[in-house]
Amino acid sequence: MSPLNLQSQLEKHNAEVVACRKCPRLVKYIGEIRKKFPDYWCKPVPGFGDIHARILLLGLAPGRYGSNRTGRMFTGDASGKFLFKALFDLGLANQPEGASADDGLLLNDVYITAVARCAPPQNKPTPEELRTCMPFAEHEMSLLPNLKAVVALGKIAHDHYVRRAGGKLSEHIFKHGAVHAFSGHPSLIDIYHPSRQNTQTGLLTMPMFKDVLSRAKTLAGL
Image 1 (cartoon, rainbow, N blue to C red):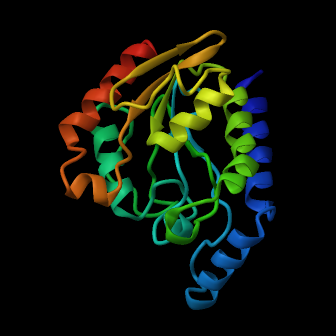
Image 2 (cartoon, rainbow, N blue to C red):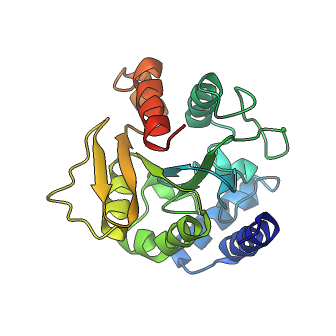
């Protein structure tokens, strides 16, 4: 597929993501947020990044005050601040911060998406909502021709990718830094989610995070 056709396919896919209204609980929840904050995005959030990416970052769901507000993955909250700084330090982004969807941030060899696309109450999508939404991420993966490594930001992302790759959860257990190989699918590497809870408690530090991302670069041949 030519770059122009690939870009067109991703734009079509993103439009379908934004238009989705399949989960009544989530539609109601983000609708209530919009009533309080009319300037918020408050729609499903599409993925973004380099269409030639060799690394995919797979998160959980938009944060209420982050990408649900800005309309771009991991943008506008503490998780994104931590993530983009790490990507910049490793040469995977052109700037260390992402504050808004039009701030000029560009990713290098990285594409970011999530299992769920709508901000959920208490940051906890239901299993049914995750199953309903995961096909969007699966389709994105099929559209990225150079993908070599998937970084699971947390256990839920890990579990859904293992299932997608035809693996067994009993054989592929989530562990920070663990690498999982699958036949016919990009390798998976696990990393703790850069949530405020994980970073402020010290469960995840910047050196830990960058170490795993560096290993992802190696897996991807970067």
